[in-house]
Length: 74
Image (cartoon, rainbow, N blue to C red):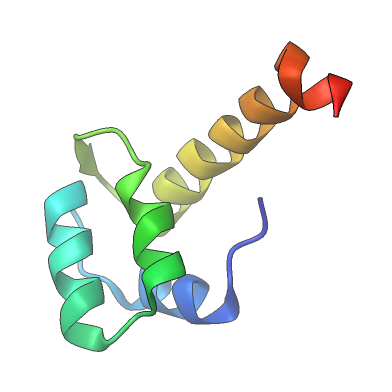
């Protein structure tokens, strides 16, 4: 999953550690669009130490999704 440039800049500018709720609150405050906020909502509820930590979780989720049988059949 490629992050939008807006979401990527947002993550780079965030203050860490941050929880998923912190990220969503700041994303709303910063005016991120609904698609970017939806991506953040897919994150597990935990504390993230840096932007790379979030990118890692999002990449793993995208890989897992691409390897599901339903995704391969499409």
